[in-house]
Structure formats: C-alpha cells, structure tokens
Length: 283
Length: 283
Image 1 (cartoon, rainbow over the protein chains, first blue to last red):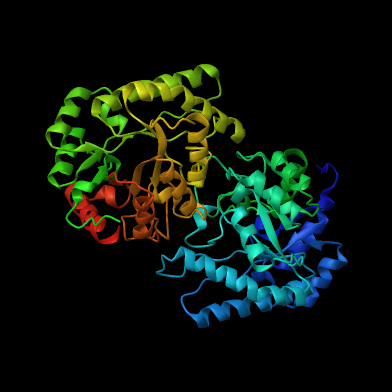
Image 2 (cartoon, rainbow over the protein chains, first blue to last red; image 1 turned 45 degrees about the vertical axis):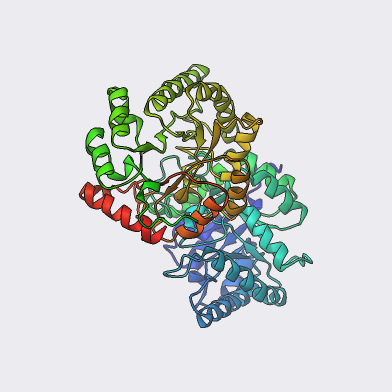
C-alpha cells in the first residue's frame, strides 16, 4: 500500500466535499493551494460555464481530474425519456473530455417513478451502458460505474454492489476495452461481505477507475447528507485501501463527503486541511 | 404461489406493526379477532410477564407464533459481554419454547462500540450461533438468522445479505439439523441483485424459516422507523413471495412494519384491517 504521508499529490478532492457553496474557480484555487493532486468536479459547476476555461485553470494549477460527476439517471418510464438520458450523458462525456477527466462517474439512477420493476431498470442500465461505451471511447473518457449503497436502490441507483457492477462491465464490454470499469466508494461498499473478492476480481480485470473515501457514522442522521470525515466513523479505511491498491489501483484517493449539517457548514479551507490530515492519518 | 384471498390464516402480524402501544394481551386479542393465523411477539412484551399465561392465551385463540423477536446482539467488546449475550439469548430461547414459537429471530447485532472490526464482529456471530445451536435444539425452537439491510451494518446487524446468512448456516450447521435457518424480510433484502439465487439455495437447503413483508417507501424519511405498508412502496412483493414459496416455504407471511410517524399513529384495528386488505391485494 502506498504511503500517503506527504503525498497529497496522490489525493483528490471531490468538490461535493465543500458543499458547492462557491464558484468552481474559487474551489479549484482552494484545492490546488491546499496541495492536493486532483479534483473531481460536478456537472452543476461546469455545465453552462466556459468548460475550456475551467479546464485550463485546472491544468495550469497542476491538478488532475480524478473523475467527473456524474451521469444522468438511465432508467426511464418511456423510450423517449431513456434516449434523452443517453444524450444528456453523451454531452457530459464531451465535457469530461474537455476537462481531461480520468473517468465519468456513472450513478445509474433508481427506479422510474411509479415503477416496481427493479429487474427492468437494471436491464435499462445494461442497455444504456452499451449505448454509451462507444461515446466514451470516442471521447477518451472511461465510464466508471459506481455501485451505490443499497439504501439508494429505489431513488438513486439500481446498481448496489461491486460484484453487480462488474457483471455489467463484463456483459457490456467483454473485450475489456479500458473504457468501462468501476468506481469503488468506501461509503457505498464497506458493509459488503463479498467486497474483498469483488475488489480482487475488479483488479484482475483492470476495472478499478476510481477510489472514493469518507466514513460511515454509526449514528447516521440522514440517508443522503450525513457522511463522515475519514476517521470519524466505522469504516476500516486503511484495510480497504490496501485491498484496492493490492488489486492494482494506483490512481487518486478521492475524498467525497456529503455533510449538510457538519462539514458543509465549515470554512472550506478548514475542511480541506482536515481532509489532508485525515488522508495521511486515517486512510 | 398460494392464493391469500380469504386465507388470513396463512398470515401473521408481528406486534411491532402496532407500535407496542398496548399490553400484549390486548394485542393478541386484536390480532386474533382480525382473523390472522399467526402472531410474532417481542421480548419486551414477554419478559417479566407470565410467559405461560401469554402462551395459553395465544393458543386458546388459535394463533400460531410465527417467530419470537429477537436475539440480543452477539458481537461484544469483551469476552464477558459476549458470554452474557449468549446467556440472554438462551433465556429468550426458553421463552420461545414456552410460546411454541416456530423460530427465534436472530438479529445478529452490529459493531461493538468503538470498533471498526467488521470481520471480527462477523466471526463472533458465527461463534455465537454455534454456541446457541444446541440450546435451540434442546428447546425445539429453530434459530432464524435475519439478514438486515446494509444500512444497519454499523449499529444493528453485521449480517446483511441472504447469501451471507446462508454461509453462516452452513458453517455452523453443516449437517442441517433443522435448527438453523434464515428469516427473509422483504424490506432488508429486496434490493439484492443476488437475492433470487440465494432464495433458491435457501429453499433447497430447507433453511427458510420465516418470511416478513412491508414495503420500502421511495422517500424514506427515517432509516429505522419509516417502513411502508405493503403496496405503498417500491417492492414487487408478489414476485418476491412467489420466489420464496417456489423455493418451498409454506409458513406464514408475517407483516412487520416500523412506522413511528404513520402507522403507529393510527388505530390498531384500522392498521390490522389495512394489513389484511393489502396482504390479499398487494402480496
């Protein structure tokens, strides 16, 4: 396992960690100034802005883009809506290319409104990924399927385990082009009794495109916006990182914390300083 | 799949569904009067009371006890605490026998305080189940491991998938004595991409001891106490019941709803009437 002491260049900040309270240009400056090697911006910060200019700023400051967040939900109640979702993702992939993103993060989407057809929604995800793979290759930006915690299966993502994400990768990209893989997020996966085996498989297949950290708070108060800072919760992050890196992952360790009542209330530079400290002491 | 129309005798009410607002004797009367064939009481209602008298009341009204809820958490920070947990479960198993319970529901417990050792906690569960198996046989009450939703992995149960629960059954009870199996709860398992295969396996091994229903609300507001009434959420309950019954389960369909802000605020007889209606129309 890599030693992160003094190696913030190996670490990245997902801009959600700062709560999207400031214009992206300020966020980029803060993250670079704090010494991190990477950034993972969100579409809400990019779309409608001058993407090329943002890309230049990121590059000029020596930051890598560890990922671009994130896909439009795929499952839809109608074919027209499904196709619109695909097109939205294609547009985002072009922005990801402009940004030089190392991957485009796929949060698959949950059940369409009024639907109880989980298998159908999962089939739509497979179909959608197949439709996006060519675009990804054309853009030079791999698709990273991020399995989300099962508590989001209804409303955010019908892909909920790493093994399931890998099954989709194999079904859609049997030839292993390098343009379809997974994002492993500690928050979503830490509980999974089959995780260690799935990480090994993902590594063997060269599918690990991103690794996200934060922590699971024992007394989680909100299902979406109460993630913990590394070290404040129950996840054995060093063991998890060891598994991921033993499987061959050598990309950034990306911090992604949604925390409406705690970290998003704090000074952004203080948040970044805490991330830096915890990455070196608790990951 | 069995037709539940007019067959409330095949259905059971877990007393948590009524919010534990009344003495157990009233709850038993209500459930019998509403026409259900079974009841699943909780230790909080039984311990310290006259268990034999409660058992007589249940029997006199023609109710089965589809399960007894539930185990003391097994994982512990010290050996003394672990052993105390085992003894508490042994005492509960004796009450389960007095009640004539068809199974004792095992909610394994989460991580001990301050612990990040998920594998260690899971090992303690295996060890504890092995210690309890003989008691279960002596009492004539099978142990039903209930995998809990992964969102409870930290604080309530380190067993989170049906496949994982079955692995424990096999490790502890290779000879398949009939005294170790699983409780399948729709709320905890519905999202699992490996669920169908695990149900088949569980059936083949004769391990399905209980089947619980409620619903997952798309806009869940509370991680513990916001379960939905069958039909109000996203779970395809008829498909799930078909899987479970195709695998050979022929026990009760048990309703277990934790709903502090909704169903626990309503008149108990109205709740039971709604359960009866939804069991026949949405399960």
